[in-house]
Length: 350
Image (cartoon, rainbow, N blue to C red; front, side, top):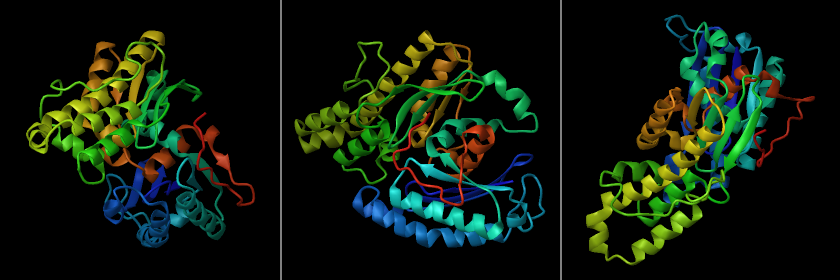
């Protein structure tokens, strides 16, 4: 059994994952309400919240948790755990340090080996979690090579994964991430934090009524850019009177969201013409967006390959995806040398 700890940003999360039974328990404490007045995550506040939140989560874990498809509690999980894994980066330095400190303490107290996991690797493998069953390992090869679209507030990446878990970054953003463009667009539209889901809720109008720029639409270069999109929304809103903005609000939100989706799906389509893949995966916090999921599934269907998406609770930062990544790609684990595991805020996926 694997105990995973995640603290890269503003979620404190623990999870237990069994290589035989799958998810045995997961606990998440979110900080959205604490950061809402500031319109975004405040790093110092996030670190302090982790210090407060992890102890109640650990207490819940130690009380035992129901096993999948059974009513019996999982007795004394600390005795069942055979390794501990923790997010090593990328993320906020103070937040990562607190998660790793907890992992080190438990590793020493329980005499269990400790390993670091790349946070982005957790996202990349999260679409495979719904496929886990007793025959998963013998069936997983059919999905590779796999094309992963990772879309979050901090990252926008297109990644190829081969059957041997070798990873290659095919495209990334040159500036803002797609999730950041949605959040900052929401702020310009005076929507509350977190902005991405608020834009989706408001996007009930005609998504083709207004045209916002899609970067690199005239080139086959595999790269993204969203800073110009955000700027274009600002200038667009400055030209409209408040009454018009109020009337056109659902159409503006839908059109802005569609520009983000068009930029993402355009490069996915180009990847599929340049490389051969057996599946597409959508992951990261923005992968909860229903319009994006629908657009990516349509692309997969048109190429006769499956489109994999995570459970909704595994789209944001969570410890289950960290545990699952360590199960999917144990060769990519970073061992702790005498409990001196370091955190890397700018760790890259490789």
